Length: 299
Image (tube, rainbow, N blue to C red; front, top):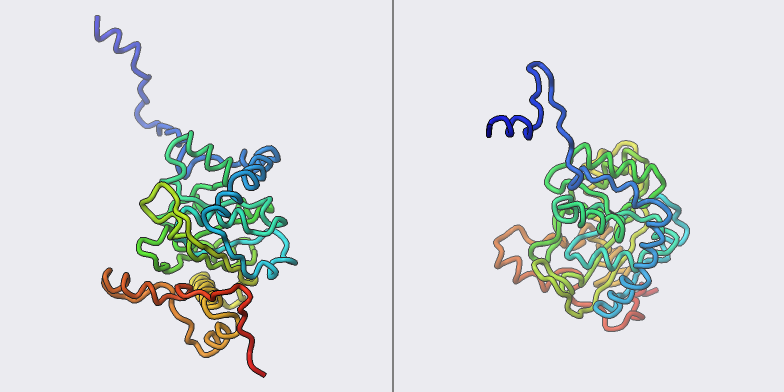
């Protein structure tokens, strides 16, 4: 009798020679976030920016914004590529990216972290416009999701490092942003973020008050004779130059860029203790006392 009930309750078997169709999960990198690009969803994000993100980063970060004028004439779609130290990075950028580019902004987010189940997936897609990607590898599905978003006229925020900094230094860029730029012919806006690692460092669940800043660079386009690896390296170099611009001023940063002496914000290739000791010497560690202290060339 027990066997009979089990026969009724068990799902039907698949005949030999027939390939069994397996349903793709509805979370993780397979989550369909298209609904979050609708008008009502964008309205919710705009409401969230002005009622939560802007007040929160003003309270905890008092952000300084540099280079926003470089984006005044820029039209969508564009790809924003920023260094990544903290979950506060996205809050800072949602609050400071110019309004004409923020309305259609989507964020590439780790599928394993933000899309772990259907509930967190829906929240991430709705409130930050997240698109799931696999962080540990450059999968075709992740790239297709990003390309589809850009081809739909949306701006895209990518953290080319692939994850938050584990020690306060930046990490080498992966070619994701360059690959999407090549597929879509979209310019890339490099961004340097400073101080967010002190607001919400990796491993912490509650923010601490600390000064932060965002430096926007001018849009970059991929050269005809350039491959994705070379373009990714050039984007990374530009982010390093923006870090030096924040630390030393525009003129000094341009002189160092011309001389090839821009400091590397990825840190020394040495042990963990040496990297921690050298962290105080990175660009941005010693900031100008006044935002008006612009170092112009002597003529």
